[in-house]
Image (cartoon, rainbow, N blue to C red):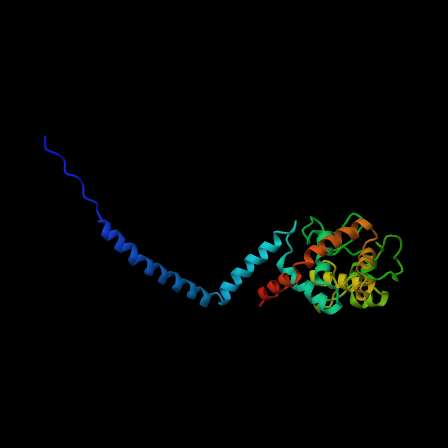
Length: 231
């Protein structure tokens, strides 16, 4: 029987060494090119946008319920007008209606809208029908009439200039809450007092301030990302 020939390796040891030596500078060249290319493109708007959204999501993951990004510019606009921290407004919104995701925006006792105003608080306690908890017997057409609200000293605000102050309109509701909180104590630095005036419950105050402190820690980042998103 003839002996089988021993198979020769595809590449000789010398060739392998040569290829390894050759690949080292090629790999370094590719790495350096990729690095400097990334430095050039990382400043492009679409790259920054992707990065910011990633940061935004990482922040939102810290919360039990995401702050809808479309609401943040509304909170910020109200903050600028009434000097109430936007993060405090977000905290109220979270506690009141879970960022307007409740099945109904009318509570069992009659509080209405995104930020749950009793009609008499929104229109004004000087209204002749206002007493007790503040449900009142206010005609629907008067509930959103800025002139009527002004007459009776209510907190309702026509934030978007459409001629009505509507607690079921997100802008009007947030601005109205900011106006209330400002007058109730925030403008004097009395946040806890203001929150208690919004709802006379120690548990409510504790809940709102809990979320406020959470949001405050990321307030500047969230505001920057949200405002850039609207451009």
